[in-house]
Structures are given as C-alpha cells and as structure tokens.
Length: 346
Ligand code: CP
Image (cartoon, rainbow, N blue to C red; front, side, top):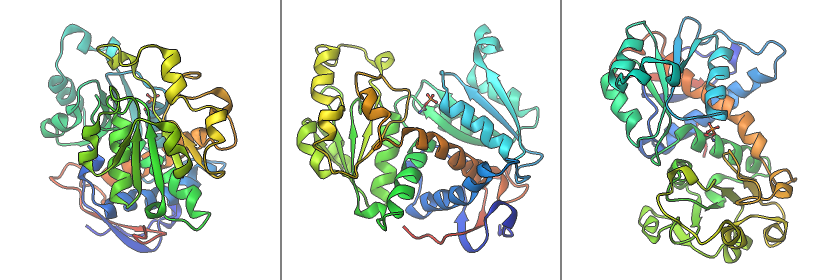
C-alpha cells in the first residue's frame, strides 16, 4: 500500500518501502529496511523539539506495553513514543495481572487482543518469545528484548546515534569500525548491533573475556578479541555492554576487580583511543565496572543522546508497523510505502 506523504510529521519526499507488521529481530531486516527506520526516525525526531510534542499519526491506535522483565528506558520511551503519535498506550503490569495466577503468555496476549489493540510491545526473559507471540495474535508484535536473542529497537537507536554523529563529519556507517565490549554472550543488544552494523557495512570487533565473548561469534562475520587495549586505537565507536549478573550461571571472571582491570573503560583507556571516539552504553550501567563515571559522563559519551534518540526510533517503528499503511495492521502483512526526507542512502 502506498501512503501519502505526511508533511505534518516531516515525512515528505523519496519513497521507502516497508512491508512488515512485526519488528522481531534485526537479523531479519534488509539494509534498506534498516535505513527506512532510520530515515523515518530522523524525520520524527523533530516532533520532540516542538512546544506541543504531539502529532496525530497514530490517533485511534492502541498499543500495549507487555513487559515480563524490568525496564526503565525501553518501557518509558515506547510509552512516550506512542503518546507523541497520539496512540492510546496501556502499561500492562505483569506483577498485578493474572500472570501471577498462572495465566499463560498465549492467553494473556489473546485476551488483550480481544479488547481491540493494534500492537503489543513485549519484553520477555525467553529468547524467541516475541516471535512465538507473533504467531498467536493478529496485531503487530514489537520485540522490546527477548532473553539474550535480540533487542531490535536498541540496535536501531544505537545505529541512529552513530549515523547522526558521524554523518555530521561526512562519514558513513560503512566507513566505521565499531567495538562491542563486555558480556557479549548474554547480550541481546550485542546481537542486534552486530546484525545492523554489518548489514550496513561497518566493521565490528567483539571484545571480552573468553567466557563472555566466545570465539564462535567470528562465524557471524565479525572479529573477536580478548585484548581490549590492543583494539582501542583502531575503532571509531566503543559500545560498552552491561555485565548481566542476572543471566550468569557460573563465575565468568575471577573478580569484579579483575574484570574492570582488563575490560573496564576508564580515562586511562580513553587516552589510547582516537580523539573523536564515540562511547555508547545501552544502560543500565554498572558504573565502576564496565565504565567509569568520568567516561560515562564525559565529552566522548553519547549515552544520554542514545536515550533521546530511542524515542524517535520507537516512534518510527510504531508508525511503520501500525500507522504508515492506514488501517491494515491486522492484515497478514503491513505493506507501506513511506515517504521520507531521505532516500535509502547508506
Ligand atoms: N537499554 C535498555 O533496554 O534499558 P532498559 O532495560 O532500562 O529498558
């Protein structure tokens, strides 16, 4: 379906095709689809700078936040994104719902859907939960993080932030070398970043102890290193991952002190980097472990910038999945041609 340009929300010129009802994993997306989200987000970012931060693009649509794991950034920004697009948003609280009485994910989702919703944003501890849900319901399903599998909107907002900052210097993602550092094994953020970055041509090096960054990741077309200090001088972006203590089943390193000594990003290590290196972290941070406070709050850090951009990216994802094609979100496939300020320029 072709959608008329929406000049009120900055979507104006060149055509971008979007044919997905769900956003489950960046591994599934083509480079053109990834750029479609980034371009749409770029147009929508302006909405949040207006005095009245609201556009009618999703008026009449209903989005449910279905979070089975805790969240600050993702949950809040999906809520604000839906509100800025004039959708109704329901924050489903698992702890006070009938899930606590043993109701299944399937029954929970189908009961919510029976109330006439357009999208479920799901976070779940199990890898594959979002995809499973997408087979059970007719509405759109957006993965807000499933186990250690993927966190696609985090990957997209990281990419958006990288592109925005380096484009201002006349550089493309395909020219960049990105290090993803830390607990790669348990990180859905690492996997989503890995797919998105490599699809757009970036060079990626995963760095961490062998227990948290196994060499098998090299099979996915990235480099693997266990020596952070040797990687630092060669990268443009360092994306630091949280050590996910809640997912560790055994001691992955001898002590916190030792982890910090070999893989913690501090000012001394920053001195080894290129002067324009960009520091990212998806949050929440273990300050003093994977990142020091001076680095987290310092001039090379784009961590709060990532959070700001998360809103624009989630507005774009909601718009593309349930809004761009008009009223077909319950059909078998959401086929839309979105008119954006940008073409599919990588
Ligand atoms: N980055 C991220 O997913 O943060 P939250 O867990 O707070 O949503």
